[in-house]
Image 1: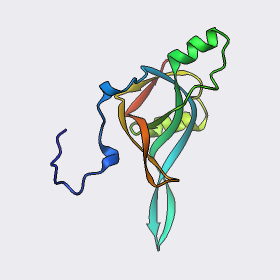
Image 2: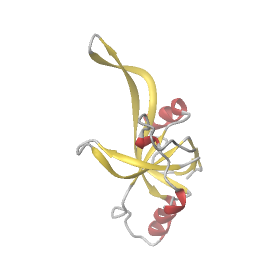
Image 3: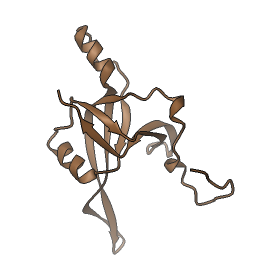
Image 4: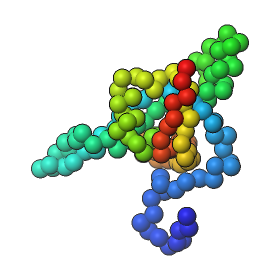
Length: 139
């Protein structure tokens, strides 16, 4: 996609970074998953709705996990990847809520690399993976 250099409505967090600059794993293992719901403002108060906007996860490269596990080495020292699943959220949310996503190999569908927002510092810090959907590969 091409953007105008003078566009003041551009959202930096929605820009896709060049995937060739990153080592993006083909498959991942999800360590934790959190369902994010939409909030509506009613009388100045934020009210949580049933509508799921995305699922945020921490994940590891499945190939690295497999190799380390086969060697009997702990994966605790591997740095986790931040992942957001933004498509097919109702199906994925059901899987996340009953923990069916955790510790199984998963293929990312249409992954993208984007800047990650650090809420504590109120600035951009690092990158995250964003994907449209996932495919569970099994145990």
